[in-house]
Length: 498
Image 1 (spheres, rainbow, N blue to C red):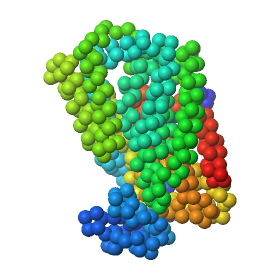
Image 2: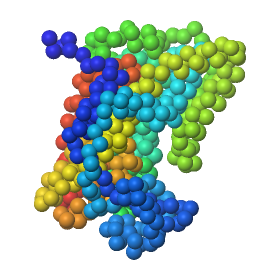
Image 3: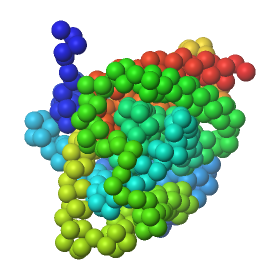
Image 4: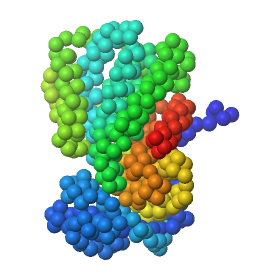
């Protein structure tokens, strides 16, 4: 009987979560911290108390008076560019319960707020369709499958490590959505299933961002907000990254080997034919890998190289990334000699294929919209900060790990979590006699562990592309999450006492 139970579609699941959070706004007290932001144009701090703003001198003395133990240069240099919470300023407010109309409008507001990443996803869908029409994918996959014969495991190792490196250095996460339609056919041609491809990409990104070493969107901004140098605790995070990647690789490869030897061992064996028809798994191709198709593949690959370089070095974000793929699609269309009308129709059809994924991203954002409107986030933060009073430092560190895992359900943004919580949470480390880098690590590891299964994060959008149910993903990944949680708790405890 239980085997027949299925979770609803990602869209319905997210709407149910939004409904649950809407109901919570009727029971969780509203509350708010005062915030502080540096205004570069006026070179002053702007303190916000409810709807009242006050300009303050941008000096270290101002920060000390507000009990913010952060060097002034972190604000002036732009290291901290979002409003931070001011410790000791939390106050309860009149309840702001969200009603049925708010619930209905939340996904719409979420889609509008996520328009940048949604447009990127739609453009990527168009690029993939044009690539498929050119025949370059078929020819390239057939050639790669032949050259990797007997050494297919290198696909798992190389893809997972490269994406983990992207995650730990510049926060490669949302951008990985572009990789699924490209890499899944390669993994299918190697006699793996789509779960293996999903795992290499999503788990690679998750473990990389979880153990960020130089990622400006997590470890650097969190360290700045905690008032410490980002290099503090670097060695521990690097060792955690190496250990985490090894655990993930061993876990993925054990499953992949079972599937390669016996396809019936696949968690998604009942979807095998459907997924192969959708993505293709043939190692033969009607297209020969000639000079033109090689050039098309190079142009396509360069889109990712330019995107990664732009994000990591030039400060690009979704607008620039989207432009890169749009230009890439046009260049590929020209090289493939696709007629203009055929190109436009193919591109639009490809974008339409990822429309469901785009809606998932927007609906997930709607959960945050309800949270913000109901003034719940600061209340959860305030109560979380009081739980750890009087705890031994080893227990304290691990409780912080699980607190951050829980908070990440409501605040899936790493940079948003950092500026909201670090000014409040990091001083707690002083009270138990440990370094503030332990709070930064607990923040990263806690968010990272829950990211493997967090329905308000990227996993549902990723699953929608691969056409795999959330229940099947949980069946695959939960044992790994348990292993990583135990490993993380051991590492955190060691960092506290060594």
